[in-house]
Structure formats: structure tokens, C-alpha cells
Length: 76
Image 1 (tube, rainbow, N blue to C red):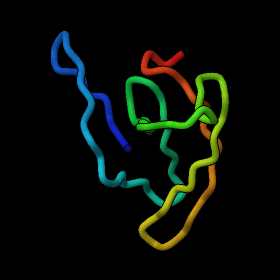
Image 2 (cartoon, rainbow, N blue to C red; image 1 turned 120 degrees about the vertical axis):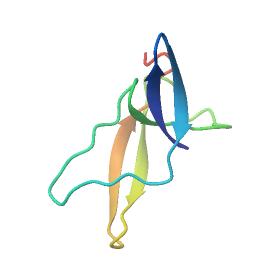
Image 3 (cartoon, one colour; image 1 turned 90 degrees about the vertical axis):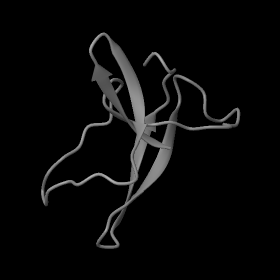
Image 4 (cartoon, helix red, strand yellow; image 1 turned 135 degrees about the vertical axis):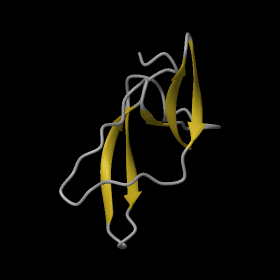
């Protein structure tokens, strides 16, 4: 699942995101407190401290495989 963390005063929450606009030649950082991927019903292979390959699909049909670090919900 793709989420974005949003602050609302002293509280924060996660918003489901279907897509993200990235300008040509631009970058997007996935990080706790911002855009992040949330894996549900994971296997033992996806544990904090490990890395997993993720395929990112772009609107123009481009696919990029990127390696992501697995972290807890607290970003550790």
C-alpha cells in the first residue's frame, strides 16, 4: 500500500495514495513521516533490518526495480 503521512495540528495520520506525480528528471523520497510503502500480511522474508526489491510502475509504462529497507511502523 502506498501512503502519505499528513500532520493535522498535533496529530498525524496516513492517507492512501493511488499515484504520485514526479516531474521528468525529478526525484521522490520515501521516508517515515512522508511517502512510504506499507506491506500488509507479510512473510518472514520481510522483517525490519532486511531489504526487499520493489517494482515501481510509471504512467509511461516504465518499470524500475528499487531496493527498499524494511522498517517498523516507527521507522526503525
